[in-house]
Amino acid sequence: MPSLSPRSDLESLPKYVPGRTIEGAIKLASNEVPGGPLPSVQQAVTAALTTVNRYPDNGAQALRERLSQELDVPQERLAIGCGSVSLCQQMIQAVCGPGDEALFAWRSFEAYPIVAQVAHAVGVKVPLTPAHGLDLDAMLAAITERTKLVFVCNPNNPTGTALHAEEIERFLDAVPPHVLVVLDEAYKEFVTDSEVPDGVEFTRTRDNVAVLRTFSKAYGLAGLRVGYAVAPEPIAQALQQVYVAFSVNSLAQIAAIASLDAADELLARCRDIIAERERVRDALLEMGYEIPPSQANFVWFPLGERTVAFAEHMLDHKLIVRPFAGDGARVTIGTPEENDQLLAAAREFAAI
Ligand SMILES: *Cc1c(COP(=O)(O)O)cnc(C)c1O
Image (tube, rainbow, N blue to C red; front, top):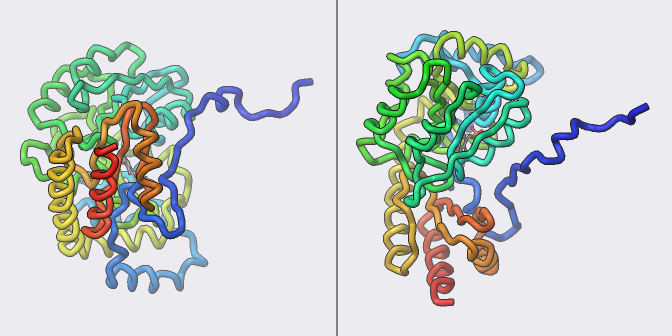
């Protein structure tokens, strides 16, 4: 008799490596924003604590109604998820059968290969361009009859590069209609390049495009876990079908609405981070680093074989960054003081 064991393919499952947290060190590893929740958001969450004996609204009706107004998208095309990482998995579960292919650039968001494999799909990786951006022509060429979904991370995590509207449009025109294109816009609020599109616009006219957004980054709710998808109606319904019941908790739903109420204040914070991003990148370029232009709240150091040494050097200086061994390191933009510490340590490393 065979003994009980987990699925054998899980042995090969890539591990999601969360940014480390070390007492006394500055965490620039998870693309969190440095500011804590606004008083108005704290108040809303505190008030909602009195009802946590009740299950949350499984349909997140109030939040969906609000997003429907904000985005001018019918509620039937909106789905809420326990963070957009959960929606990435739901997307694959919604469209891929066993052995179907989910395509994405690499390196891109590290959850993509994991959620693909968990959902019994085949993750197909397409290398980035030499300029660290998505290679849409190569991604197009990699589409097969088995391809059901393509993730397009814009701006791309971890390289920070962003595609322009024209490039995406040309890509969408060429993608066969049986393939769902998922534009992952987790960093949308940090985009300053006016040529970078709002992906929701594509969903108004095309029935194979979806967009993922999150409250974790610009809206500062990473610890509460809530994101949303704008999708063609049948896909939004399928996302709801594969949703783990009640997984977006009631405090997260309330906090998301309170954050939308406070959008002006939160987006003003983002503008400060954007200014810091440009200051940090300029200083790093001056030190001789190659840093691709970033449209997100982080910068990418394509250091190749020196990546691990860089991360260790940073740790010696009490700075936690996010290394991808052999490839590069991603560093989140923090407060001006934190960024100054990063620059000082980077200057030292450049001199080694
Ligand atoms: C951070 C991130 C997400 C989602 O984060 P959640 O906290 O799960 O909402 C999704 N996609 C990309 C590319 C990200 O960087």
